Structures are given as structure tokens and as C-alpha cells.
Length: 254
Length: 217
Ligand SMILES: Nc1ncnc2c1ncn2[C@@H]1O[C@H](COP(=O)(O)OP(=O)(O)OP(=O)(O)O)[C@@H](O)[C@H]1O
Ligand SMILES: [Mg+2]
Image (tube, rainbow over all chains, first blue to last red; front, side, top):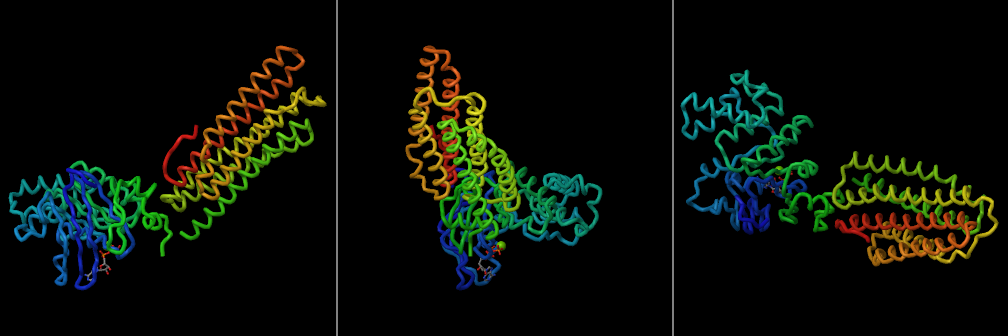
């Protein structure tokens, strides 16, 4: 949406994996303190788009992009933009919870340590605050020294969110964060995401349209690398403007 | 989702059938009323159970579809429209029963009407065509059929008032006219209500087709 409150904006952003074009001239805006959901069929470019927001796609040697993405007005592909600074501002959560094979405490303290914080009491503080923000504290406060791999899937995912929050990002990107979780764990993560929007800006990829409808303020529908429709979530699911969106969300596809 | 769309199609068909059934009851109740045909009135009266039963069954099926498929966009709007339409169609059936009831209770020993039922006859024609158009619009999603609906409803309202004023005069003239006049006033009132129910369904059809919420009259 056009607004002065956008934290991320893309301008005719295109992306190729070698000669495979994954995104075509995407114009999208991610508004501050809102939840933006990205939906679309498998392979339409959702992950590519969300990963572009913090330049995660740079790992691919054959990555080529066109157009721009700005983070708070600054072109993220500019030579002067430090990737680590960008990553610090933009945290990412993946489909499969991926805690490090170390203690809960270590998992959370890891990021702040790499950013130069070493004082134990300060780290303790960050660990507690991050885990509380991720609505996990009550369940793990007595097991901070235990391995993170002993947590349930839903707890692991919330730990990963805590880990992302530990470096105080401004934006959280989530790529299908609940697809491996049961409905109860999913409900907890959804509540957490809604909670977090007061302090953070959130973009979430999801295959669950009801989830997008439940938690997001805006929804973007991608199809074959193009942004077909982008608008207030209620409008997209109740009265989409584009026939293609209509066909996708009503399951008349294929 | 193909299964859902088939089930939705069959639900829509059954709603239309129920609409035809209710409209049939209304037409029959008015025919019975005009002809003071007690036997026919009994028949209409006995159809009310069927309407209630249809309402329950179709409501369950609507809920079940929502529960199983959590539909979106026009499918969601169609189910919302069906949910409302069901209530209003049932009311039309119930008013038809009420009209039959007036005949059976208030006019059971009468051999002929005290006057020619000119306005009432025109009123039932208007209401019948409104209900028929609403059902057609639901079926075809053609909103042009619903253009001018508010004005058509205004005419029906006006006819009801006309019958009321006319009957008032007759009742003052001769108290023997009172049972007939009360019956005419009540029937006119029920027909006018049926017109309103058609308007409410028309509103929901607009929502179903275009996603806009509008007011008909
Ligand atoms: N590393 C890669 N190398 C080459 N092509 C890729 C690579 N990653 C993705 N693609 C292609 O780019 C397109 C977009 O992929 P992407 O992973 O962004 O889709 P997606 O919408 O996230 O799909 P899903 O819902 O299945 O996760 C697809 O055609 C995919 O095959
Ligand atoms: Mg993906």
C-alpha cells in the first residue's frame, strides 16, 4: 500500500536463478507495525521474495536481480549497505524449527554475542526478555541449560523466534512458520505474531489461507512470479478484485 | 475443492426449490382466500411442517459446508446469502400458512366476499413477481433483474395502506363488515411483509454477486 509508514518497499523487483525468472517486477510495500501475508501456489516465488528482503538469496551464485528493494529508504543492494547490518534489522524464521544443537541459553545468546555483547548478566537479561517476548518463558524458565533439541516442535519454533528477537530486529520475516506444527502450537505462534506486531513489522509466507485471514492486515497474492493482487486482508478474502485471486482462494485452480 | 463446489451447487439448487415451494404456498393461500376454499386452505396449512423441516435441513447443510471447507471470497458470500435467504424464505412460507389460517378461523362460514378483491389481487401479483425475480436473480446472478426493486416494494407498501383505509370506511359503515375487513387488513399486512422478505434476500444477492452491502428500500 502507498503509505509513509512503509519500512520495506520494492520497486519493479525481479529475480532470476540463472535463467529461471522467479520474480517479475514486484511492487510491494511492507508497512510498519503491520502483518503482511504472502500467499500463492507452490513455486510462485513467495520464499524468493521474502528471502530477498534480507538478501538471503545472495548465497546462490547464479542469483540475478533487477529493480530495487529499499529498507527504510535505503537501497539494500547498494554496495555501501552492510549485509550484517541488514540482517540485524531483519530477522528470519523458517518452516522447520532449526535451533542450534546447544542449550536454550546459548541459542539466544549466540546472536548478541556475535554483535559484541559478552557480559553474562547482560546476556542473561537478553535471554530472559527474548524468551518472554516469544511467550515461551513459563514453559522453559527452569531448563535454560538443557539442549534446545529436547523441546517440542512448537517450543522450538518459539525459541527460534526468541533467537531472532534477541538481536532486536525491526522486521521479522516468517516463511511458513507453522506448517510443521499441530493446531495448538500453531495457535500459540499465531497469538505471538499478533502480539509482536506492536513492536515489530512482520511479513509471513503461509499456505494456510485461514491463517492469513486470521492474523494479517494485508495480503499479497503471488502467481508465477507476479504480484497479482495486494490489499487489505479482509478485501482479498471477501471480495478479491482479480479473477485469478478469486480462483485461487476458492480452490478453482488447475 | 471440486467436491465442495458440487455440494454447493446442489445446496443452491435445493434452496431454489425451497423458494419455489414457499412461493407456491403463498400463491395457493391467496387462491384459497380469494375463493373462500376451506379445503385448499387446509392443504396449504399442512405444508408448513415441510417448510420448517427444509429450513432445518438446509441450515445444517450450510453450516456443514462452512465447517468442512471454510470457503473464501464468492463461495463465502454465497453461503452467507443462503443463510439469510433461508430465514426469509421460511418466513414467506409461514405467512402463507397464516393467510390460510385467517380463512379457516375468521371466515370459515362465509359463502362470498363482501367486495371485489381488486387491490389485494394486484398486491399478490406484485409480491409474487418480486419473489420470483429474487429467486431468478439468485440462480442467474443477474443483478439487472433486481433493478427498481425498492420502487416495487414502495408500491406494495402503498397498496397495503390503500386496503387499510378502504376497510376502515367499510367497518365504520356497517359493523357486519368487520370480520371481512379485519381479514383483508391482516392478509395485506402479511403480503407486505413477504415483499420485505424479498427485499432482504435481494440485498444479500447483491452481496453475493458483488461483495457490496446495499440497502433495498
Ligand atoms: N536455488 C534455486 N535454484 C533454481 N531455481 C530455484 C531455486 N529456488 C527456487 N527456485 C525456483 O524459483 C521459483 C520460486 O521458488 P520459491 O521457493 O520462491 O517458491 P515458493 O512460492 O516459496 O514455493 P513453496 O510454496 O513450494 O515454498 C520456483 O520455480 C523454483 O523452482
Ligand atoms: Mg517457499
